[in-house]
Each structure stands twice: as C-alpha cells, then as structure tokens.
Image 1 (tube, rainbow, N blue to C red):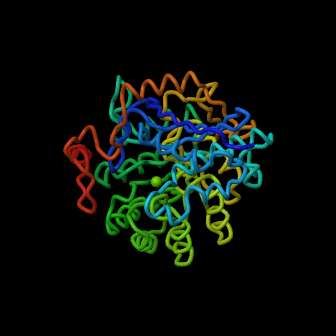
Image 2 (image 1 turned 90 degrees about the vertical axis):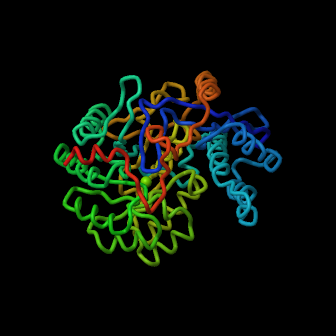
Image 3 (image 1 turned 45 degrees about the vertical axis):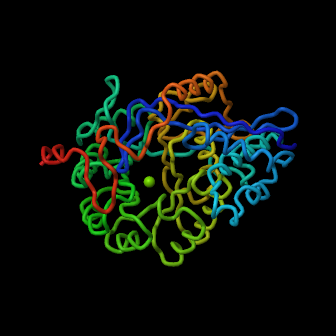
Length: 409
Ligand code: MG
C-alpha cells in the first residue's frame, strides 16, 4: 500500500438559501475541494477541505512529491511530513493535511476492511446526534428570508419535523443582540422539551456577552458558544454567567487546550476534523479533554458528505461526546456521495457501516458541481451581499437591519 497520486477538484454545491452570520454570509452555495489519494493498485480514498480554486487544488497536489510511495496507514509520519512546526510557521498546511489524512484513513480502511473510527480505537456509539443549526437567511428563488422570531421558530419546526432534532442552535450576532435574545425566548416557548444554544461567533464585547448571557440564563441552554473573542474574554464571561460556555474559535490547538484546562477558561470544546489538523488530532484532543472530565462536541465548518463522514467517525469514537454535534449539512440541496444526502433519523445520523469513511463518492455529481464552481466561482464568506459596503470590524459592531430591531420593540 503506497500513495501513487493525489488529485484535487473544487466543487460548488447549492444551499437552500444564503445563510447569514456575524462576519458575512454563505452566498447560496458551499465551495469545497474534494481530495482523492490513489494508491499503487489504483484504489482511492477521499478527503475534503473548505474553499477551493486553482491555487487550492495546486497546493494539495503539490504534496505528491512529499508523499509518493508513502504508506497511507503511517498516519503519524504523514502528519510530520506535512505539518512539521518549522515549516508551519511559514506555510500552514493544516487544512491540506486534514484532507489528505481523511483520504488516507478512507483508503487504508478500505484496504484493511475496517472503518475510520476503528483506526481511532473503535466506535462506542453507532449514531451521532445533531443540533438543528438555525441561520437567519436571505431569500433566494422563494426560499429563505427568515429573520423574525416567528419565522425562526417556523424554520426550527420544519427542521424538527423533517429531521427530528431535539437541540436548536441559533447562529446569532448578525442582528442586534436583543433580537437574538427574542428569538431564543421564542424558541424556548415553542420547544419546551428541547435544549438551545446561541453562537454569535465572538462578535460581542465581554460586557455585551454577559448582558445577553444573563438575559437567556433561564432557558434550557446546552451552552453559550463563543459570545466574545479571546481566552481571557471567555474567562470573564464564564465567571459572570451561569450557562456553561463553549468554543470552536478560541481553543483550536493543543497549546490553547492546555491553557484552557489549566485555567478553567471554557467548559465545552467543539472539535473539528479540519481546524484541529485532522480526524486523529481532533480525537487526541478529545481524549485529553476526557482525562480532565471536560465534555467535547463536534464542530461543523460547512461540510459535504465526505467531511460529514469524518465528523461521524469522530463522534463515534469520542467517549466524552456529551452534546449533539453541529452540521450545516441539512442546509444543502444535494451531496457528492452516492445515494444522495445522508439521512437524519430522530435528529441523529448513523455512523456509516462500510470500510474507510464508509461513503462512496459519486463521480458524476463531482463533475456536475465542479462545473457549477467553474460557472459561479468562489464567494467572500466574510462579506455580506445584503450590505456591500459593510465590514465586520470588531469591537465596533454595525448590526444588520437596525430597523428590524426597532420594529421588534
Ligand atoms: Mg461556533
């Protein structure tokens, strides 16, 4: 088993409608790069990373001279070959490593007839729960346009009906914080049996975060996710609000993890199979958290089916997955895997049963969505199509549609 070739293809897969967040928006599609690692017998494994284009494809394929002849099962060597610290300070290849590692786990698993989660120590659960992940949306072709508390409750109701979610996560920070507070209370009234999360992506000051945290403290909150930026900011919020805090933004590597655990800075860490540098790195971080009795969850960075499978294998293998995972997945209209999108059942997705990542790519779909990418190109996710002159400049925050907030009061 030896790596013979690496190929990268950028695709664009449509969303139901553009989704809005505190730093901009996803403009109606996700752009992802599909990474294929082929061994000397012609067997392929697949990985995925966010973004794309010719330079991203070239950066992935430029790893071939480093890895030609490499045994895909030698995963720790793979990490050092691509991510050695002396190289990383000039040229971070973390996301590239994550995608190639994902493909190697897929390839080696297929060769050995074992699942990716087996290469992490095996599954301790066969189904992974997810949160509904509610976004304010722009309208597109008659779909979307939700902003008011009633509209957000209707969105949650539809998602719960279709997929069975028991947890609702609001992507806040786009409008004035008082609007998010109103939506959270409306969700709590509509779904008294379900738990909630609010995540404004670090956009509020410490003082604003404390004010919002106290305003939603009586609700059935799982946690308060990244209200403010920085480890010390998160510490000060944690000291002042009664809700557990969570992050995928300030604890994103092992040095942060040590600091967070030693000083008790954040309660719940959302692990990501890309941001942490790969499925194995995310799993290692989870076991460190377990040692110190911290809970983990699984972060979503806007996945298609290959990355979703990596998240399912992480969720399967993490002993301390105490909270439902996140996924943007249900906002997509399609996927690039055979059989279409993986299905939610009672808010959960089953861990794939097949070897490797357990999903089969559909090459016709990859070709179709590579063509869509060629036609539509990338988009700046940190710009907002509804506010062309706006930039997210913290700490001076300019919220979208102040008229909406005034109208709501
Ligand atoms: Mg988050």
